[in-house]
Length: 262
Picture 1 (cartoon, rainbow, N blue to C red):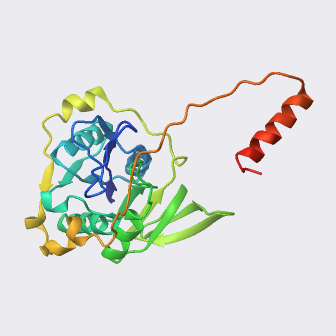
Picture 2 (picture 1 turned 90 degrees about the horizontal axis):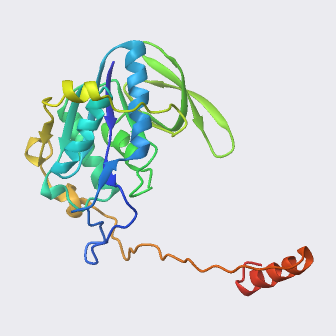
Picture 3 (picture 1 turned 45 degrees about the horizontal axis):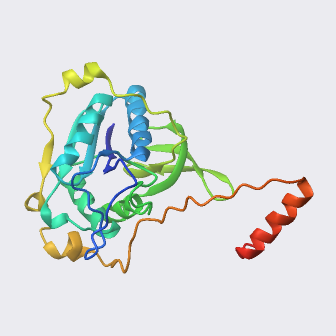
């Protein structure tokens, strides 16, 4: 089974500045890590490979330093890595990002399954996976919490819906986004780190794509325009009250009314 896993390098801290002109995060010079949700997708792929055999390819879109998360994926057991990077991809919204990664997947040839984390911690949109599936013309299922059975041409999965747990069968090739409860991710292996330290990471730019229309990538290909973005305000105000239960309940009720919560 040929499996693609989409991974992303995200800020390792919540203290990130925002470009006031473009409305995008300033990622230069800050600590980064693999998107935590992507670890669950990668672990799912590794367990499927252990059961069925096959090849795991990780693909990431980002600046050259995003190679670090691909190296981390190698340390966990991924076989191949692809970095989609080009200055013309900068500032992409979810639609342009989805199209860019889908072009990278097309360039790398056939596959049976694409696995994505539920969402990223720096965007929280949960849109890239489903939009990729639409661009690739394949079926998809989101919010997958378990894999019940893998067949020759399809698989059966459980998905966590707002009010129910549903079971669905999906044909290969397909795309799944997985929840954080599906498996516990393994730790990177030092032995694999040594064994894969010289392993190639394939780099794809706009010139490698079938569709080279610059208007479909980066800021040019992003219909979403950010009006305003800002870091959340930190409020450390606190009050300590003493008194009987009756006194405290009355004071709490008055405070909630003052704050217009009730």
